[in-house]
Length: 137
Length: 477
Image (cartoon, rainbow over all chains, first blue to last red; front, side, top):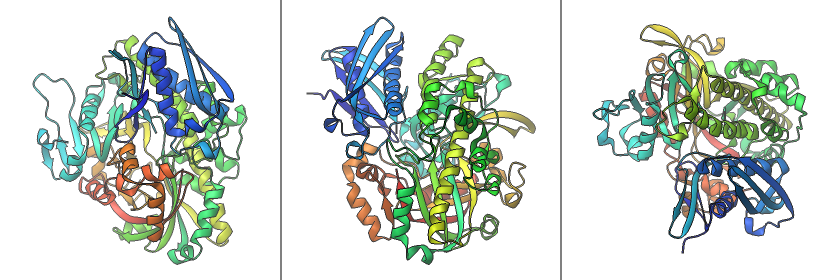
C-alpha cells in the first residue's frame, strides 16, 4: 500500500508526495511530507493553530501556494506543525496547521526554503489523488 | 548523462546539437567527460529549456559543478538583453537569493588553531545561530529592516559589524543598487526580523580552514594567503526574506508569463521580460534580498572575528572576498565586439571577473576576482582567480561548489550523522551541528570530487586555481 506522505528522488533538493481521497487530503499529506523533512512530526503536540487562506484558480499552483503559505506562517509564528486541514470553495482555499513552538528536540535539521514548480503535478488515479513537487532545501 | 548526444569542442567544452527543426539558442556545457557522465540527464533538459527563453544572448551554459535544480539547473548561467525581449526568472536565481561565500584571511597559523580547536569550535557554535528555527540576537524594527534592504553590508558596518575596509572586498562594495523595499512583501520582511546573523541549514556552514596548497604564487600574494595560514569561510544567504521573495515571485511570475503570452518550455522557468512591470518588480525585490544576504554574511563574519579575537586578541582578520552565487545582475559585457548591458543569471555559479576589470578592488585588479568553490565538510575548498578568457567563454562566470553527486535521501540511506562526525574527528576535522540527519545528508561522499570540479574549471578557462583550503572546524546548520 502506498504511503499517504512520501518522497521521490531529486539531486540537490527533495521531491515530496501527498496522497488522499480528495485533492485537499492530498495537499494535507504533502504538507506532512514537507514538514517531516524539518521536524519529527510524530512527537509534536498540536497546541497552537495558524490559519492559512489564499485564492488560486489553478490546482497545481494552489499546491505550491499552500505549502509556501504554511512555511511562511510556521516561520513567522515559530511553530513546528504536525497536523493540517484544508477546505476549498471554488478559488478560495482555507487551511490551518496545528503544532507547537520549535524546540531542539523536534528539529530534524534540514530547512525547507520553499516549494517549487519543478515536477509539480496534482493528478487523480484509481486510488485517489496524488500531489507532488520538489521542495528547495 | 549520456555524453554521446553531445558534440565535444575541446577537453572541457561541449555543445548540445540541435535536433532538426528545434528552435533554441546554443547550449554549452563546461566540464570534463567524467564530470559530465556523472551528471543527471535532467541537467541537459533544464539547460536546453533555458536556451529557448526569449532575449538570450550567446549560449545557455552550465559550469563543471552543474546538477539538477529547479527552473535553471544549479550551475546554470544565462545572459539576457532587456532591449531584445530578454527575461528575468525567479527560477533562474533560486530561493536563497545571493547565497554566497565570505572568505576571511587571518594571520594565524594552523598550529595556533590546532591547539585550541575544540574550544574555538564550541565558542563558534555557541555564538553563531545555525539550524532550523534558530533566530539571531538582532531583532529589527520595520524601519531598520528597510535600511538593511537598501543598505546591505554597508548598513551592517554602520552598526558596528565589521570595518569599512571589509566593504572594498565585497561584490558591489557591499550594497546592491536598485533595491526596492516596496516590492518586498510584508510577510517576507516579517520573516527576516529575527533571522539577521543566522547561518541557516542544509549545505550552509562556517568553516575554519587552513591553506593546504598554493597553485598560483602571484595571485596568492595578491589575495594575502600562503600555505599553512588559517582562513575562515562562511556559506549562507538571504535567509527567510530571500526565501519568501523567491516564493512570492515564483508563482506570480509564472502567472505573469501566461498573461503576457510568453511561451515557456517549462512553467518552472517562471519569468517576465526585464522591461515589464512584473520583471522590474521582481528585480527590485531580488536586489533588496541581495542586500539582506550581504548584510547577513557581514554580521556573521564579524561574529566569527569576535570569537577568534577572544582566543587571539592580536590576530588580524580581514575580508579576502565575498562572492554571491545565486543572482541576476546587470553587467556590461563584450559580445561580438560590442559592449552590451546584459542581465546575467548565475544560479549556483560565481561571477569571475578577469584581470583588469574595473569592478575589482585595486589590490586584485592585476590578478582577477577571487572565486571561491566551497567543498564538502570533509574534503576541501578552492580559491581561484577570474580569467580574461572567461569573459568570452561564459560572461565571466565559474563554478560555485562541489555539487551534489547523490540525493539527500540516498545519502541518508548510506550514512549516519554520528558516524560521519566521528570519522571526520579522527581525521582532525571538528564538526559542530544540532542535526545528525543534516550531517548525514551533507556527508562528503554525497558530493562530487571538488578537486575534479576545480581542475575542470581551470582547464575550461573559467578561473584558475590559486589555493586549496582544508577544513579544520565546521559549524553546520
